[in-house]
Length: 203
Image (cartoon, rainbow, N blue to C red; front, side, top):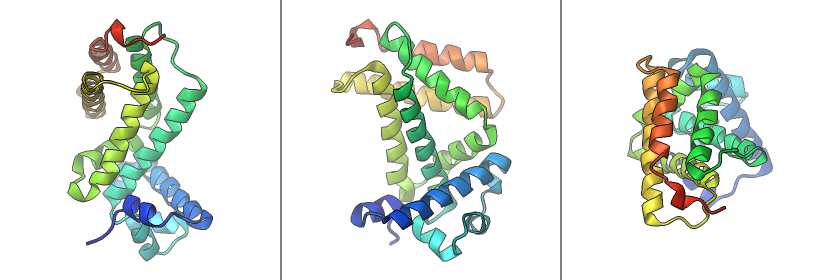
């Protein structure tokens, strides 16, 4: 059975050279997806763009789905760093989370082909990609908790966060498919963030 990229990394930390190679692969995958969406990401073309052998690419990412989910994780890590440098300015936790998710949405809106490719990868992911998908979910949760300013959430609060995550992902998918306007996405996000309530505010 093939090990996932995450499992391999946990078993043997990447060297500086390996990390640079992995970074180059992620950038190549993101660029191809940004130009032509999911179908444009072909593993041989990714390998050529990254300057690595095809076999090397498969050692890092066993499939296109693994690669694109990893690209999404990378995008979310960058978003989290950006949000920490410039936190949301809403008065309460619900407003801060809504602002955070709309900022994330606008970042994806600037590159709709890339957004579509990443969301398709999440949708198509099977159990073999579970560790990578779980990593994306944990990072999304962490971004929401940062906006709520919660370090030790209760199980009830985590349940609310999961509902918010599901709504955000659903809104992205319906917008990408042309079935929902940006204004409706904003209304949906603000509505679901209302589940947080003022009690979650720790200020």
